[in-house]
Length: 209
Image (tube, rainbow, N blue to C red; front, side, top):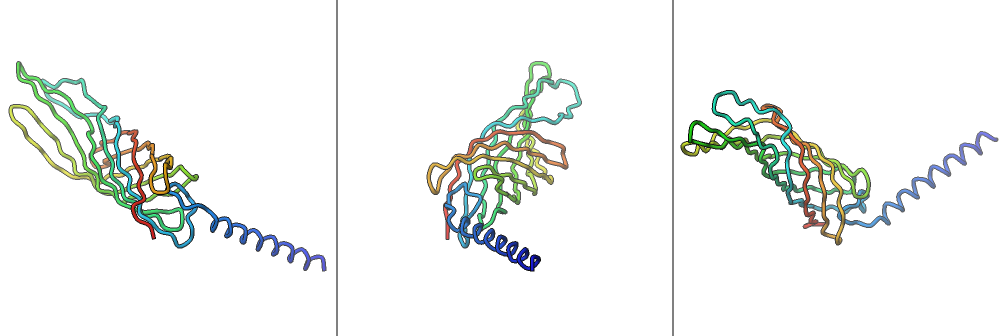
């Protein structure tokens, strides 16, 4: 008898718990930063902005006449489109522009400059940790270009596999717009070029159904 009552109470509390969770999810507001979406709601959100990138790898530059004073701090930009389903896991694509490093060349009275830039094309996954904090992980390829300006301009292009990982904080300013502060790790694994960036981006929920 006692056992039957015990299991009845357990089932009652479990049922009440799941009903409460369901009602809370249905009552949750659907804003650009919510990690709990109203069931059946889907949207696309675009992030666009930029900041500064700190190159953290070593630059292999053997040869004479190279100025070893390497500039490691350069601007960077990100453009990302994410699909928001009615759960926490999201997926999207990301591109942008990144200056990795630059240094000067000098031979006699002739000077020049070398600059390495990259354009990513990544598939990105995201998950909400709290209502306004999200983590991202991306994998894909980077189009790398070495710009040489020394007795003329020469460009050398290559591509390599790469990845990134980031965390951002989104401050909503309306139901469709928000400001995102993001810290991102970028790495081109094949060429061992990597670094850390801090960016400020505008988030825009441009489509919802």
